[in-house]
Amino acid sequence: MAEQRSTVNFANLEQRAAALLPPAHPPGAALRLICELLQAEVPHYDWVGFYFAVPEQRMLALGPFAGDPTEHVRIPYGRGICGQSAETEDTFIVPDVSAAENYLSCSVATKAEIVVPVFLNGRYVAQIDIDSHTQDPFGPEDEPFLKRLAEMVAPYVPEVFDPAE
Ligand code: SME
Image (tube, rainbow, N blue to C red):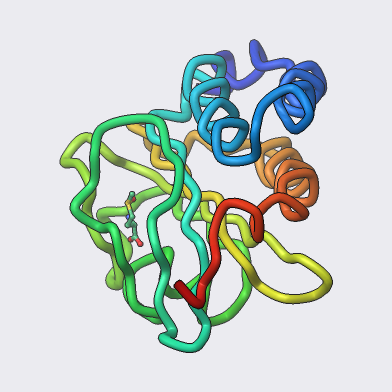
């Protein structure tokens, strides 16, 4: 596992993700392409997606993603790993989902999950959710990388998703 992680050049991936943002692509396409890039380039990222926050309804709405379709298109705050992240506005790193009590299964193949908040001007507007088919796959670089990515995409979230609609 450690070997797999060390093959990932996160700094390079960050630059490649930044290059997909406007004006290269419209915001919605850019977010989808970033999901596809991460899923393709990081061996332990098997499902990569954005959930957008609808604070008035205390609900998450599925946004662009790469990987198998999921039944979890809307997730109430507090439910599952994603909902807990929305509720607490914290990062969640779950190395073994079978040991997590409050977990919503997307795929039987998923063994681990990381959820990182996206803040815009201090407001929780979205989250990046990643499922892994590898148990305990996340190293010291994953969270800081995903937080930088979250900062990078945050300004585009309102252009892709309007919680009032
Ligand atoms: N596993 C998540 C649900 C979303 S899917 O992973 C795409 C959770 O427990 O919140």
